Amino acid sequence: MTDAFVPVAALADLAPGAALDVVAGGIEIALVRDEDGGVHALEDVCSHDEIALSDGDVEGCTIECWKHGSQFDLVTGRPLQLPAVLPVRVFPVRVDEESGSILVDPTATTSP
Ligand code: FES
Image 1 (spheres, rainbow, N blue to C red):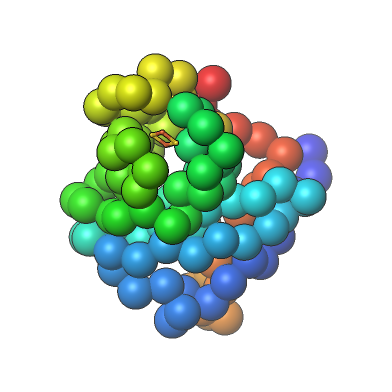
Image 2: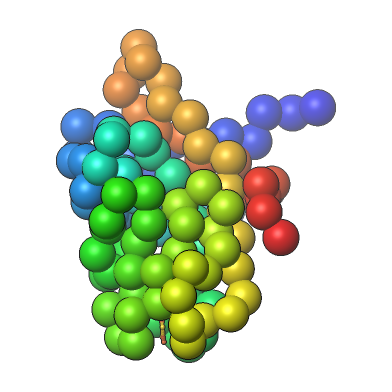
């Protein structure tokens, strides 16, 4: 099995409670740091409409779409609030402590 993780950003550029839009493997990804410092990677499209989740607000371990207010769990990608009813894809993510890079595997998902 090959390692498909690719570096997408520096951890220093993603403060807790912030989000960045990055591209990996041709997929637009919202790179999100929860308020406890954990890093998450979700497909950067709200499941309710074509809106970038990376433009939303991070609250605890969720991100809220700015357009109609659906909140998504950063771990599972599941919507926690209407109007969105479908989950967004979540990608495996890890931090290379030595280089300070955030790496994402765009070929795998950890949720439907
Ligand atoms: S576009 Fe995201 S909740 Fe409607």
